[in-house]
Image (cartoon, rainbow, N blue to C red; front, side, top):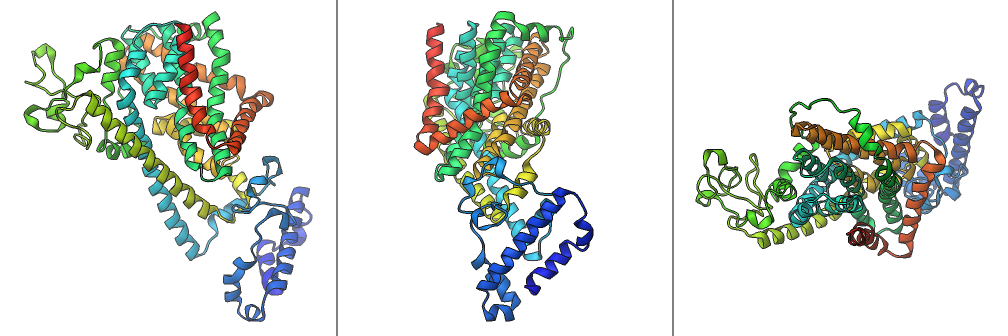
Length: 548
């Protein structure tokens, strides 16, 4: 008893008599630690052998034999990561830790533990990098497979319901609301689509953007509890977007409040801007671009009516049979009389990059069918890589957090909602994709590291951050109408946050809906794929048919 308890007690509480005079919260914390220490001493005393008592070093090694694996066995009732009853603890049951405890758990380690932390961090970053690569590759493959259809969908001025559905379907097909929003802004800037139609399109894009992290949540199907939490963490984004559209879409149709609000804010003119690429894109894109690089110009040209179909871009042609950017993807100067096949090449849905050259799946002379097959193969490869990296990342995080008290984890991740929104927006601006932000956070929700209550403000921030891409595209377009649509996207998301987040009773609606969907996965693992097909494709197609 003296050997195990007294040194630790004196080290932690050198002035315990003074400590006992402090606040009731401190007294409760002190009492909890004393009870835990007494219980641990009694447990160790009953299990310690004579050899262990004589050899403290060996006894430290053998501590694992007496580790408690359930909160029911602890007098304080606190749960530790990896406990058998880890999934039974509710958020309101988690005790409050001090920042001193968090700092000690984070920073107080011996040399061996720091070595393990370093190796674990490097491994986690390795899996995270290739997880981001797989998301980038999946987005490129989706653009190759669905680019022609998405461009055709956005090519016409339509009624409000059709505009909403087309924005959602186009985003679900190409797996990127940033790309969809940029194209919509370009369409408005080119006078191919009216401002009012552009508003409904960006509303739909907001719904379609959450399909990616819902797909990512299925990577945790092996563990029922993880799948439940991950699916809830992914669908809280869906439910918030659907609820926002349910209120703001009819309000916009009736009053055009977004149109009038943003119209009052517009300047007389917009100066030329420069395209900005986030630092994460600069790190991830070169690797993914060597495998597959989608030609976004095809989607824009079809949407704006410059070409009738994708057939205008085929067959792919490289001058002198040399596969590089200069000979294949450089554009002809029509004013100078340059012709395709003589002065410049031609690329289809798969293009080349100035820096990395032509990707592995680019083929000189390829037709539309060839590029579609390449896109399909890359989609399968990206999904396989995503699942492998997700499993590796989850495994590394589980090992690193094993034995950590939920009080410590909750204290470290339980940030103020407003700060959470700012963090989500900042991350999304850096990676230039709300899909990437929410997809990276979803596994953490599945593990229980981030609670659903913290995931909601982070996704709301991601919604704000993704509007920056549209604003940047508007700056490049040099058109006031394009800027107005980008501002409508921003204020649509801000309006949704104002309605559904500040008031607790309203906030509980998306949270309860997400939890209900998460619990549904306990009854069947087929719920996530069925949900994706029905919500993102079947219902929108039915609405599109009815609106026609």
